[in-house]
Image (cartoon, rainbow, N blue to C red; front, side):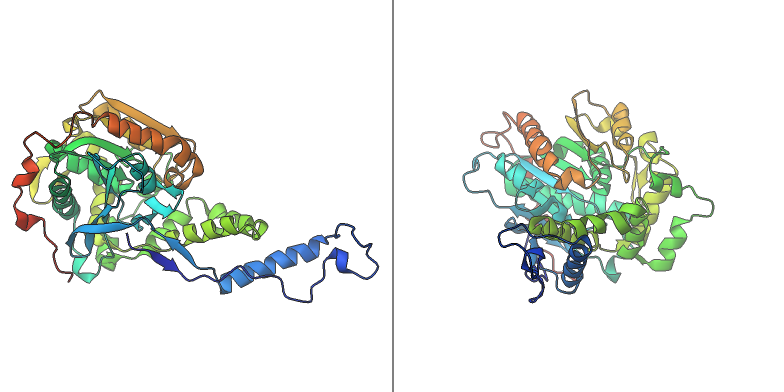
Length: 409
């Protein structure tokens, strides 16, 4: 993924002329400076205000990648191997992220990057970057993503990697789409990992699940009103999930740690990603709310996609399956993912749980220490004996016209 810059200045020093406790007339030479709490608070407040006016320069999405397929605003990126990482017979894994924010949350910074972790363990990592939809995309439905973009992305990865089946990891709404896709096209997927994925929406432990059943809530009316649902619509809703933290606690933490530059830079990266949302096609949003949150059709086996009469049956998920959940996730509560395991067709299920929230699964230090190395080992264990050499490869028969770069419109 190309580097993305965020306008930043160096952390400013206190203005000249301000004395510390040891610089006062009458202070004993060599004695520790006396810090007046009110003065210290004002210094931190001034630095915070200066930071808001002149934020430092930071980078996100720094792991080098190359596009292997483009279609409209969507790109499939292939990440380059890390120096010293395994280079032969690397199992291909495709990351499918949600439609709401940008996918660089999976590659936020060196040392806190899911992409980097998977590359380091010897995987061949691909990612769907949805781009930023415009008015030409306002009529897209879930069918266009599942049986369209994702299917063509999978075929592109199969072609480039020379394998007939690949590993798929879906995160959040991308996990829901990945489960749908794999149920309809199981022959193309070796393993499926569902990370904080909404599958069973029948729960009262998530505010979104409760709000979607509020009297008078009409997702289709919202879709018709907006056309493209703006990112501010989602940000406002997500902010209400934990309003105290969203509007006070995190800024209090920043004020208290304003001299901790790594903390400040990580704070700014997260703020950039949080506010770097993309719009969503109205029909996609409305269908997801109605058939998912309101009617819970996926676990009932009754969800159909436009242009495809087949009901999506989770029992078609007969390949090895992994679930990855945050036990403190208030966006997609753990049971929304894990309860659906009772509906799938495989007994080969690995559950990964972490005491973190929705985003902590991808950016917390605990996740990068404990979760992602173990997950990569699980993928590799289910790839043994799957070298593309010396066996027929149906991916090679894909018409080359399907794996091409389409001009952006």
